[in-house]
Length: 270
Image (cartoon, rainbow, N blue to C red; front, side, top):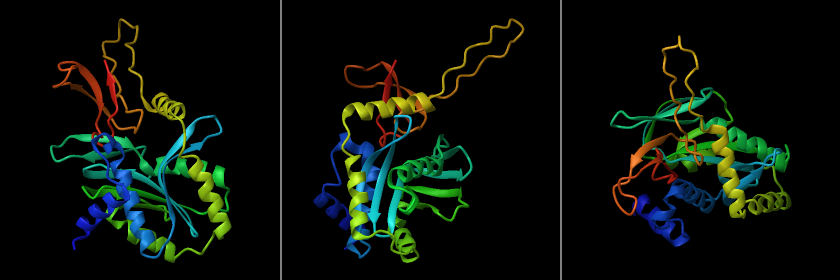
């Protein structure tokens, strides 16, 4: 039977596929599904999603997916983009270019996951090995992605098994059964956060990454117009685009919607 069909059937059995209102987390669920296969095929581990790691300033850093194993913790940053992906490990922003030549920029996922690893080490200690893996959708093409660090992997989702297998086979066992249970318990407790914590997390991202519109200089000799910097989604960091509602009670009204839709459904009413 075709693997895609098996994946769908298996995913439904495990409850990994949900209705449309939860499509914003669809890519993360598919990554978790791939890890279920990894575990079933001999490299056993425990899967957790949406972990809110505490930062020393009282804020949180949200991790998409982790795979807790005796080798250490595999830390996944999931990106469900389409189109061609361009990016360099040292660049602040990467680009997703669609077939209609529309390009969207998004925050460098390697840097994003590096922050996650920083706070996870702060929580778990330096004796717990961490492996950084950036996972993109099979619907995209990693057209020109430059990664120099040997401890960072940037892959498409269908390479998850091979990537984990390669790291696993070349890494010594690092966690005893007791330590593995301790790590899993700590991380699992951070998946059960209240709505206030989630709201504060979104607001902190908004404050940090959403650039404010520049104000015109109060100089009569300055004829240049001050350009407005792009608005960024406070949930995922993607570009916000101006849209007009076509249906429903708000038909005709304008709003900002996330360019990563349907992965992210954030909207900002005007």
